[in-house]
Length: 296
Length: 296
Image (cartoon, rainbow over the protein chains, first blue to last red):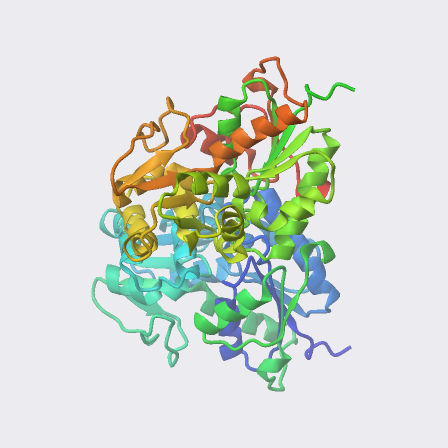
């Protein structure tokens, strides 16, 4: 049976995964998605591995019931801790954001000194580190949990003196002492801070869709410069990897879809989800349904 | 049957309710508690009313199964949104923190201009406002959601330049334009910031257990001063109300309990719970059990 027309399941702990969905919309215009945001139980970043696996399995069950042809785990934390658990449940392709993010960093680094920022759970998992060293055994990886960033983004404090202060507290050591030349934005919320991070630490972007302004108003256009830190957004490379996997598996769709073909489900607060999508991501999402986690 | 020896059920969205439990330990030394912290689904402050009610009912079922003689909803958000839902489930006394907090503010204010800070859900509920106006119809109530405070406390940033900056952003308008003389710390995490808030806005404490230092190191001793803002901690007045209700219902226990008689359950991460209790509240809690929300 022809499966190319089936949707792609995308899930996240909440709204942040929309930064990944957005890269899919832009770069795979023929694919429709079913997005599940676990807004009732967000954030995942400070939960235990067992809980993150259990929640990811519940959501995967729901997506499989919708007959998706592939699953993208848009959440870094769930990708770091539940990728294997999800893969065990199905034979369809399952793509997390960690491996594509690690690959992009390895291709971007010159010195092999790579920084990775994310939630406490993502950093503690050490998974970015493992993937990077598999691809580049000589690499040195420096992880730093930045727990306040998610909340600063959710409060819309994208370019704000408090955010700038926290950027320096979290990142100065990576830049000045660890001498990284590449920084992975290892949490779906962080790309929304990329302009401010770039300005503050002297960074350049890697792998962004060029024409699109980010929420902070800066251009995504990659610029290059001596002694600059390359900022890697796993969302973009994940969309690229999804594209490749769909082609390899003969699952790519060839008919363009319209935005209203996408479906969005959340476990709480559809209105907040819509508002965040509109205000922070400039996405107008009308068709958001509430789907309680007990019903998954 | 004699029910005085039975425990008191206390629940919260996570660790914050320990500030209420701590007031019970200090002021009701004959009572043992069973605490449930919903650490897997924390925070409640930005969830919908329906979700907060559903979660509160699940936890109440669990506490009732433990044969508690009374229930304290230590979470301001759950008190504001789910008190009636919990009371409908049982005939035992159910005490939230909102009504005691409102009563303390009414007795503290001179001008009738009362500020209330809390989570978005608590402030939006308008419940503090309603209780205050029932008790003091001439009162003017000014609410302000302070969503970052919880995260700053959870990161241990109790006296920190970023926290100070956010205190001024959130509170200066209440002080300078709304001219409040009383401020309710309407979220269980906020009392941990009370020394810094008091220093920054010129506040004095109301109703604290006198001899105990707070996490910021300042004394709790109430001092009085001209033109000062009285900071009200609902945790203390809730413990006082619990004491009174137990006496009135003939349910008070007369035999002292030891700390190891208390039982603690969390829905995720017992180690994090223990660490927060130890580092932030100076409570050594050894007997924390994991009780998943699916098992409630």
